[in-house]
Image (tube, rainbow, N blue to C red; front, top):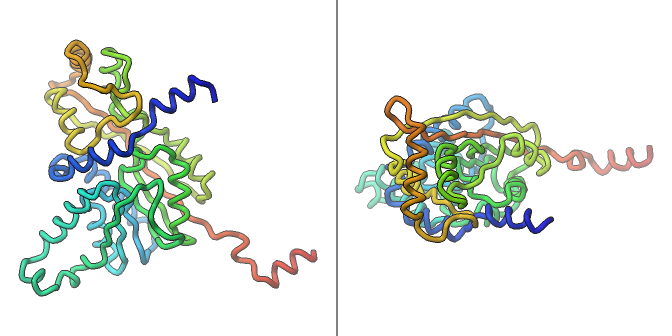
Length: 307
């Protein structure tokens, strides 16, 4: 690897401590701003309608405040749920959301169990290094969290490790055109990276295959949110913890001149009185296949060996 390639990789390396702190700060007001996250989650859930599979244990990787976890529990009422998130503050909000749906008298009598809440276990951890044992999960689900991973192939290998044989991995993440307007605007202002880098859908599909997954299915769609002002875009991103956490980010506040240049360029994109913010949403699912050697009996192996 050349010095230039190394510098580029470092520039796009995500600082996990910064990510954790950002989501910790965002947790109390996250649900008020996470409109896109909920919408994508619901679209993912609708895709499960076409997959005839009932897992016994479900992992919500990057569970946030638990919207997806609760929806998955409704869909699979007999399954145990594992909610994993890098920010403990998100788990606190998730527990609060679950408890708020249970009448106080039921909580006092310990009757929350009847609504399935006892089957949710909250685990603080990083998707790239899951604190889970091998082959313990039937469905690994991840909604808009993989973009915070530095090594997607390693992450997929981790998911495959904790999946049971025949288990399903379903996810969504962001593609390269995400926030292209914001990226273009700041490109006119300075040389810093103001938006995280995102991986192309086809590359993600290749990584799944190389990580040992079978029959991957990939597709994508564009979702465009509209805003009145550029500052509103930035506020929404901050509210959901989506800070720029790459090595090439500016280390201080963006200067007044650079900010004005960025805003001026963004304003040229105004359409119908609104400013667009485009998100390229990538969806995928794949299966952990049955190993060919695992289906061979000792007798069959001896027979094949002799032949």
